[in-house]
Length: 119
Figure 1 (cartoon, one colour):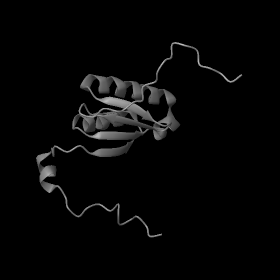
Figure 2: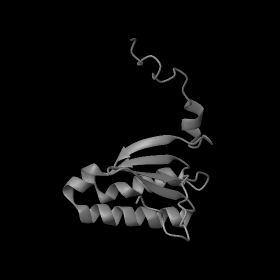
Figure 3: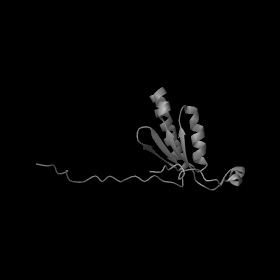
Figure 4: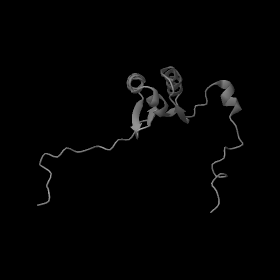
């Protein structure tokens, strides 16, 4: 089976004008790793710029679980403040979205009657 390397290669076209202007009006999906609490400012800046961030937290978790809790609390408050959204993606990742992007969550119904069990 042929490799997929050619399918996923970056396009030769670049957005140099957008880079010069500073804003492109586009939303980008960016993967980042959270190594230190100081990295939160970069994450917040990216979200404020309108980008979606997939944040890998395992590097920080290896150093301090308390720092991970603090980081997630700060990011949750930030997302609420700017009207964005935040959700966990498994054990190692968090996704943070700007205000124009919402995360779909499956609604769980709470039945009024007991759940039937096998006899």
